Image (cartoon, each protein chain N blue to C red):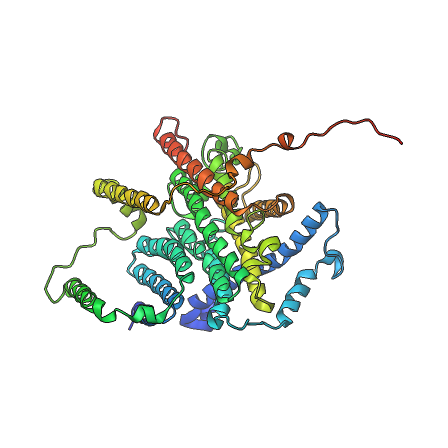
Length: 349
Length: 198
C-alpha cells in the first residue's frame, strides 16, 4: 500500500490525494454498477423460478449476458422528449434520481477501514442525502406534461415523505443504543454484550433488541425504493408506468439504475445498522467484508421475494400503514428503548 | 487565495444567483427549484464553517421534506400572470417596508466588525462532534425554550388540521382498517357436495 502511495505521489505530485479519492470513487461505483446489472438478472431469474418459468436463458449461459445486452439496447435507443414537456427539467430529472443513490455510498463502510469518508455524522448524512431522491421522481412526473406521469409523481411524493418519518425514527433508536452517529461505531457497538462474549454475536446485533424497528426499517425501505408491493407510483395496471412513462432509452435506464442502486443501498444500510455489518455471526469465524455481502444479498433476495409474492397495496392502505401503524409503533418503541436504557436492565453500556 | 476561500466564493456565487432566480423566475416550479438549490448551497457554506449539524439539518429538513411538499403544491397551481400582476402598487408600500427592515437587520448583524462588537468566542473546542454538543446544550441549558418551541409547533399542527377539517364525509367510502383484518374464511365458504351424475 505504501509503495502504491509513493508511486502515485511520484507521478501526480501535489494533486495525488484528489486522484487517489477519484480512484476510490471508481472502485466503489464500478462494482456497484455491475451489481445493479446482475441484480436485474437475478430478479428475473428468481421471480421466474418462483412462477415456474426459466427466466432469461438465451443470451450467454443461463442468460448471464442478458443485462449487458439490455444495457446496449437502451444505449442505442432514441431519447424521445414529448412535445409540451419542460425540456431542461425533463433531462435533469433522471440525474437528480441517480445522484443521491450514488452520493450516499461515500460514507458507507465495508469494514473498519474500507470507507471513502469516515465522517462523524455519517448516519445524518445518509438520511439527508437519501431524502433528496424523491426530487427525480416528482420532477420527471411534472416535466413530462403527461397525466399518468403526474399522478405517479404525486403518489411518489406523498409515499416517500410518509415513510421517511418512520425510517428516521427507526434510525433514532439505532443511534440511541449505539451512542454514535458514525456507521463504523454503530457496527462496533453491535459486537459487545453478553451474547457476543459467549461467541454468539448474531444475538447481540441490533435486530433482536430492536426487532420492531428492524421490521419497520425493512418495510419502510421497500416503500422508500418504490418496490412492489409499494410500487403505486409506477403501478402498471393503473397508470401505465407512472412517473417514467414518457422516458425512453438511456434516460429511462438511469431511472432503472437509480431504483436498483437504492435497493442495494437500503439493503446495505439494513445490514450495517441491524445485522452487524461485516461482523461474523459466530465467534469462531473471522469478521470480514464477505459477511456484509452475504447479508446484503439475503436482504436483496427478500426484496425480490416480496415482489413475487404480495399484491400491490392500494393507495389508502399504504398511507394507513405508514401513518397509523408505523409511526405509533416507532413512537412507542422509542420510549421503550429510552426507559430500557435508563433502567438497571440496560444491555448497551 | 487558499482552497477554502475558493470554495466559499464558488458556493456564494451559486447561492446569490439561485436566490435571485427565486424572485425573478416566471415559472413558480423553477422558482421553487432554485430555492432548493439555494438551501443546498447554504448547507455547503455552513459545512465550510464546520457547522456540520446545521448543514445536514437544513438539507434533511428543508430540502428533503419542506420543499418536497412545497413543490407538490406549486406544481398544482394554475398560474395566471395577469392576476398576479394586479394590485402590485397596492402591495408595494408594505413590501418595501418589510424589505427595508430586513436590509437593516442584515446590516446590524453583518456589520459587527464596523460597530466593533467583540467577536463571539468559539464555545466548542475542536475535535468534539457538534451534533453532540448541540444535543447536550438543548437538553440542559435550553431545555425549557426547546420544550416550549415543540409545544408551539404541536399547537400549530393541530390548528392547521382543525382549520382544514371539513367534517365527516357524506359519501360512502371504504374503511381500510376493517378491510385488512378480513379473513378468507369470512368471505368464502367451501361446500362439500357429492358429485352429480346425469
